[in-house]
Length: 408
Image 1 (spheres, rainbow, N blue to C red):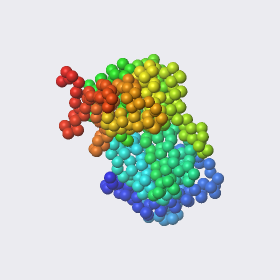
Image 2 (cartoon, helix red, strand yellow):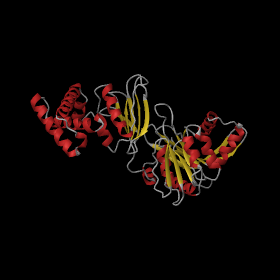
Image 3 (cartoon, rainbow, N blue to C red):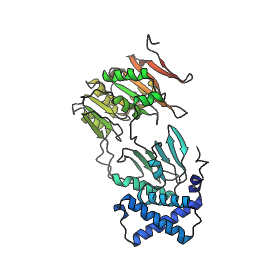
Image 4 (cartoon, one colour):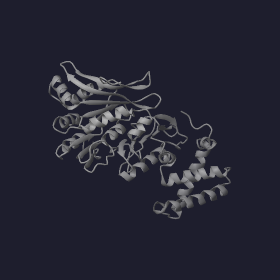
């Protein structure tokens, strides 16, 4: 995980000399804009570009800076990003190959491409610079971070998810995470080409979704649960009424009858929050054919199971778990936290009647994502729920296995 070693410009941009030049230039431009009372926020991008390019040219000449044309162009680009964009990370936001951007401080910026983290050849000046960029990102959606509200998790206008945390909660300085919203959702063919799943598994899951199977996609953080849930959702027959419930809207369904609901955090007084449980309960009153919950992680688990048990067949959700057995234990744990007062056996029976299929997705150490198993629940006893794998990915052999009876 290192910066591009063969790109002299990338290395130059990381030097203290360049950062000092960029900071001085930025201060100069801000002073100039204020002196002339320029409202550049209202300008067309091309006008801003011409203005910055000309001022950088004059500044380099007047200060007799020892920079070549390529370095001068880099200064101009970075100056535009500081004035109109997200500063050092604007180029990463614009890069369609980048899925995630992670800032762990001024000098620790990482990107994720195809499941692999690497150091990005950008840096901030200091903690204050990081916080200013965070505030600029949050301003259009009416959010901010400060000492009284040091954490924020939100959805940007383009659908990307942003999480920011600042001191005093973040002990080593402000941190920022951006999960970019894919402009085009991955298709089944994309996943087959990447080896994430086989055509046989795709056809099996397509039929199960069409036949209104209740299922849960399980996996760890960054495993692709939401991406896979979105794929499954595309196979719901046209004409069905679908209600989606998410903390940050990521699902993209193109059906005619889709109602998208999104939770709302409490205000500064700690009031007026709208939780996932509130939304799932309300969804049950909206005449849904299916309910899709982006992720169950709290007391909404009880209402989701109720939905699956009361005629809303074909409902789906995701759950943070690393194996099918772990998923079932986690459901019990969440139900306990939610105040479930029934017996353990009764709860197992509810799970058994509510959920038919578990799809386990995972990100391998190589960064590749795989459907590790497609698992069917087969029964409930006094001790535990029983299940069997229909498909499983053999990590050692590097291939998907069809374990159904009579499968070749």
